[in-house]
Amino acid sequence: MTDHKEILNAFIDLGAFFRAHREITETDPTEISKNEWHNKFNETILLAGHKNGWFTRENIMYAVTNWGALLTKENLENWLATYDIGKNRHKTVAIIMAGNIPLVGFHDFLAVILTGNKAVIKLSSNDKVLLPFIASFLISKCASLKEEIEFTENKLEGFDAVIATGSDNTSRYFEHYFGNKPHVIRKNRNAVAILDGQESSEQLQALGEDIFRYYGLGCRSVSKVFVPKGYNFDDFFKALYDFHPIIEQTKYANNYDYNKAVYLMSGFKILENGFLMIKEDDSYSSPIATLFYEQYDSLADLKSRLAHDREKIQCVVANDVLEDEVKFGLTQKPGLGDYADDVDTVEFLLKT
Image (cartoon, rainbow, N blue to C red; front, side, top):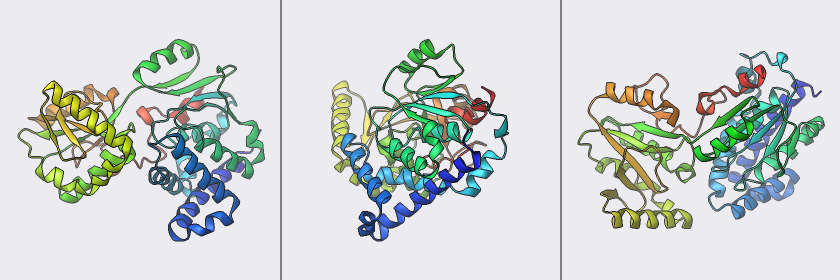
């Protein structure tokens, strides 16, 4: 069995590699071709973008930068210090990954490997190249990991537990097929924001990062805002103006045009600024290029509503409203202990 410290060091090396790649990319891109791993990673990023038009270099590098900041010796040791990793029983864990944003399944992969288990991974067709590159890098640092990381396109068999991420529809399929095994099955969730009308332009601009990063495709992307009754969106639109180049992305622009046509033909009332539409709607999940909103009378009533709907919400952006709120601009920068759907995957793995 692979030594835990050796595995941990491999991920620490990966973090250093991510940070170095970011620095080289920003300061002297010509250095990339002079290093085998940096050159391979650069080619992988290009390939990922060719296979999935939503995976721009900017968005992939955003994910890489965030993981580079998290994968340090101090961060990893502090994260794992609250668990008794030694009590883990080695098992094979099937991971069915989503592909909505770059490296969306990396945290599950990290948790499975660092707790001393084997990962059998079924990748999304939308994200097939980034994680295999990372796995090859890790194996180059810790050869025994070759026996602990497997990618498959076949029917999953011979596993002891499963972590599956998908939509509300696919979750029913997952429950049917994997219900007799220990499992974590995730459904659709979205992030929301609470505004009180006193936000600074800087806060609203930061909220734009939460809305537009990854084109709003992430489960931590803000898809809806709650605003006080009679809220004026003028300052909101003004603060978001710097994000207008997003409309130059063809896939985003096509979604904008299509959804706008649907709204207009259906007689829905919308506000729009040429790259974002705002529509009053009680749903949480909004289409691409659309932000839903609801008006509230009482923060106390709104808190009760959000508590009732907590299984539909990944996180809440607010300013001194909730104990577990996320500050403006930080939804796409979760920490190692910020578990999707509030399910502690490390604890799940250790207990299974």
